[in-house]
Length: 384
Image (cartoon, rainbow, N blue to C red; front, side, top):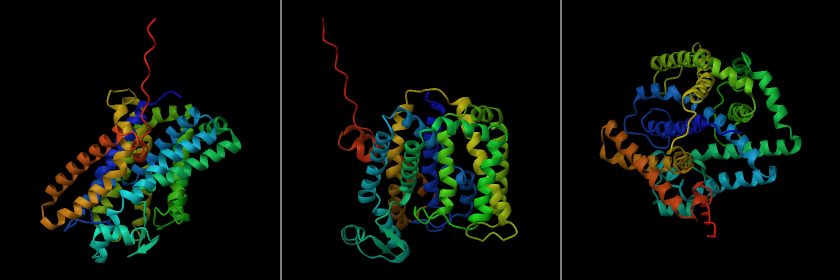
């Protein structure tokens, strides 16, 4: 496979948006670990511009990258071992050392937990149960990595049993090229949203999350098959402009309903089907449009691309702990939301970069923050 730099940039951009999104969760009225003193209803409107497609896009791009990794691996067993080391080791380390401040803050803010963090970490965090309805220990925002690992293992097992990835990609290409690229996925998502899992909440709990798997697993597989589907690529290149228009129209409907029923106000039953349908159209069409834009305008290398691509996973591991802890600490000062946002944003970017920059320089830390081992320096050839 030839490397698609546009999808690299798309992955980088999606994680940058994710940082902004999680900062926004501190200000929006929706439930989260810790909130500003007076949540702002209007923040939900710009957040809904990415809410329906940011995670599906990451699964599609991850599926595409997984195809390249599988083709380079020396067999399915080596591929499974490599992905387990790259995904699960950083997740376990983060669950043990980086994530614990998040449930501690949430327990203090929402449930009146009065113990210090050292007491929580030593006595309560590893009890493997619930405190105030919160599972401990927890993977929190790293649920995406856990799901990605599970989907990757399913894919590795299927490849080992069937060994027909190219044939499956060819069949998917015939099914999804042309109008099928829109009809089949939208019908699948509509079946889940309206028939199988209406009003079923996504839990990120892996074993009790059928609504999420119905959406995310096919999107991961679609990215995997996209790498060998020239007909689908031709459809994307020909129609991404119209997909962008459909995504914007879907978002306008979603935003209008949100403005009419702001914050935690329940959407009336007569408007809920329209809201759900608009989100489905917005989500899938935005994914297609963004892939088309990345292919058309961003498929070129840059000196910063390799560094940013490598930095994405460490940024993802640490960013939410910084946001939650700093947001909680700022509550005592009663600052204006704009000042809170600026401080949290600057501290998050600075903290993420420091975490990555220190970790990448220390060989023992690299695999613990999701990086490959330090490359060995090539020896100079002996002088004749």
